[in-house]
Image 1 (cartoon, helix red, strand yellow):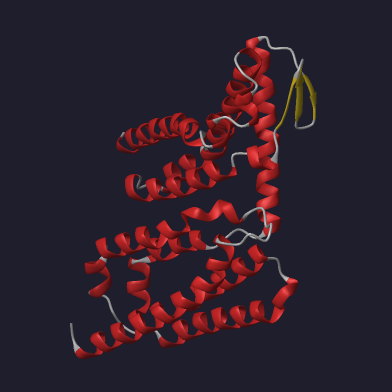
Image 2: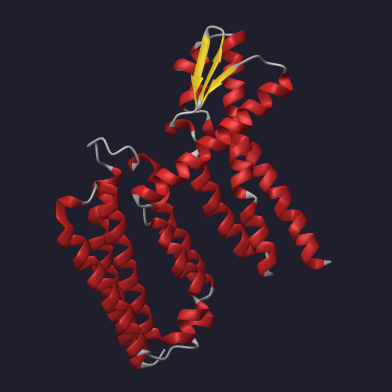
Length: 288
């Protein structure tokens, strides 16, 4: 490593620490808030994303280091864009919700950090580390409007799947939107039951799996297309199983049992198994 590279790395590490501290402020406010923002609990995965990105960057360190050459104009432009965005987010102040403020600020700070990387290490190094660098954007919370739209889509899909499974099982029900009436038991596919957390986990897992195990764009695209149907099917299956247990065993399966409150990971595993099978099939198709 020559002298210029050492100085570039030192300055970049300093900038990384500074930006990391700035990013921690909205992140801390989001993850530990008790203000009633209903979405803050969906982002417990954020802490893992930088570790995965760091590991992927470490694996590509030889490609990155051998191509280091500063790109001042492009890097400064990208960094300036991020700084302007961060300043605009801070200027909005209390007019933004907690999650929207965190989303805007963190996206802007990440953009500025990518600009610093591009400035110090150049376009070729940036391209060599492009996936782990962009993977960091999974730390950015979804704005409220996008989260609402995604949750509504999952509610619609889960309700449709639940109704289909009930029909296949011969279970009588009366449906009003997201509400199902079955004798003494009434269930609602509420926002908290939409499967949003497992959907986000599946998307992150899918993007990582596509990068690590698939090579062709078409196969990666097909793999990502399977995520939503798998998540909806898994969520509908969970709703039906809990409902049938409540009807035939104990109503507490729906009102406060372990499977209702904390058993989501048990139903995530079948979805993950289906996803893994599709991944294996796509790998075989690539080889063929």
